[in-house]
Every structure is written in C-alpha cells, then in structure tokens.
Length: 108
Figure 1 (cartoon, one colour):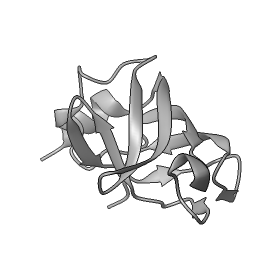
Figure 2 (cartoon, helix red, strand yellow):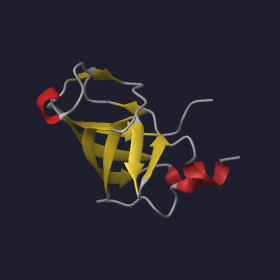
Figure 3 (tube, helix red, strand yellow):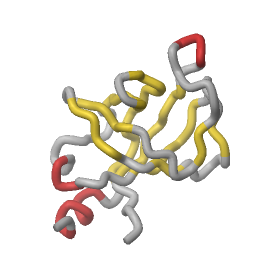
C-alpha cells in the first residue's frame, strides 16, 4: 500500500561540517521526522529534484506511517528536525497540509 502524501515541507539538509550527511539523499529517503520530543518514521519524496545534496534546501512531500498520531498536532509553519538516529541531518518547516486528515481517518 503506498504511503499518502500527508504534508509538504521545506527542508534544509545540513552540510557535513554542520554535522549533517556525507552523501546525498534521494526520493524514498526514510529518516526520522522529529518534533515534540519524539522520532517518527516518515518517507520523503523530492518532487523537484532527483538528488538532495548536503547544504541544499528542497521541497519535500512527507507521508507519516502513523498519521493518526500527527493529525491535529502538525500545522503550517511548524518547525521540525530530520534525524538519522540521534544525529540531526536537516531542519524543516511545514508549508502545506495535504492528505493528513484523510490518512488519519483511514488509518487502521
């Protein structure tokens, strides 16, 4: 079953010198989406580029694997971190809510 597109965000990927990734990310990248003290699995799709290099700012379409946990908590303008384990590799801001309400209602 494909993961819905719950939100759109703008994400800045930290450079290696800032503590970020050494290598690029591609669509399907599945880091942790971190906010309110919790890490959540959330696959990312990058609709405008094929590869995201450290230091890039990109538009990302994000689907939550547990959408009910996020409905009513995630909002436009909300800031979050992208993590790989405990390491922060990116910083983002929600720019649009897309299918989150529908995803939450259909989540079993």
